[in-house]
Image 1: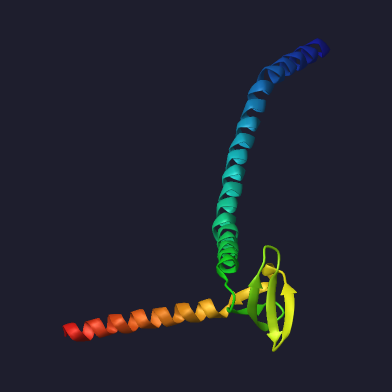
Image 2: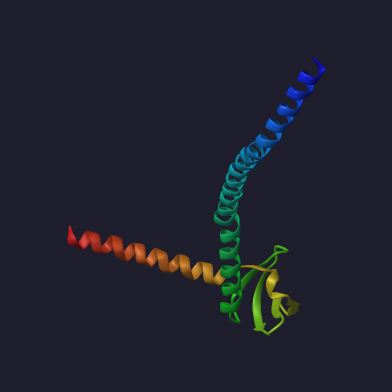
Length: 141
């Protein structure tokens, strides 16, 4: 019985050697499918991050840069520190601002949070447009 047992073992071993490549292919195909799903998931996360985090931050930075570039002498500014100041002179590197009567300081342009004068001008223009639009409707009625 030992020779038969040895014979059956060798056949089982040969069959296992023949089926190993097909098992390896099946496992790699399953892993490849998981890899594709993982790449799709990370791609989706990247798109969501771009749409909800990166793009709005870039827009705010662009608006801040335009606000600083469009500031002129005489504008009222709000600084990060909370001070409301008046812009006296705009230089390449610094803004010279008046904190109080006769008190001039130099601040970095990135410290400017808001240009109050420009915001008030925009609000007044929007109110005028709304009034003109409303007045136009009344005339047609």
